[in-house]
Amino acid sequence: NAGVTQTPKFRVLKTGQSMTLLCAQDMNHEYMYWYRQDPGMGLRLIHYSVGEGTTAKGEVPDGYNVSRLKKQNFLLGLESAAPSQTSVYFCASSYLPSSGGGELFFGEGSRLTVL
Amino acid sequence: AQSVTQLDSHVSVSEGTPVLLRCNYSSSYSPSLFWYVQHPNKGLQLLLKYTSAATLVKGINGFEAEFKKSETSFHLTKPSAHMSDAAEYFCVVRRAAGNKLTFGGGTRVLVKP
Image 1 (cartoon, rainbow over the protein chains, first blue to last red):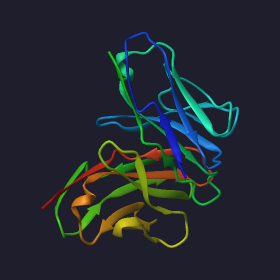
Image 2: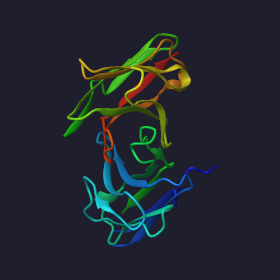
Image 3: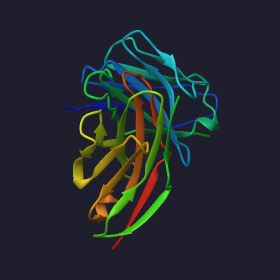
């Protein structure tokens, strides 16, 4: 059972380039999330989705777009990368909160460097 | 609104001694509470969760936490630290039936031999 899988695990971009991070989960979870983790700032929510075809903004959505065309996949896009987007990105998924507490299941992370 | 405060950004313990990681929360609703661990260059792994059942929650690797509503705390403990416990720990609160989680700032644990 793979759980939550993120690709790619590492990427180096030049300022202005675009890229997409892919998150896939095989647990049939309704909710999916994208976080970024920066030193001293903990995890900050970028965007999230409460079901197929839906997305919503989190705390730090600027510069990112997301799509959830299939229930098992949640894509995070950077249209024009900036050095401030250098970070480690984590995808997570969860059951509905009413069922079992709604804990998050995390991927291994994607380390992005923007030069 | 909800918030989480982890009272120590760094904790240093000797191997074999107890570990205490402190977490206070505020929530307008009955919360679910979680502790996660993150080892270097890894994702976050669930240690334990509180979801309004027993107030003393046992997790993996010998960790446990006690939910104290009167103190709005959810401190994480382990009786005897192991070298493999060196990691960063996050306290997380989720409003019951809510779709957003709030993370604490994290506590980095150093275990000395």
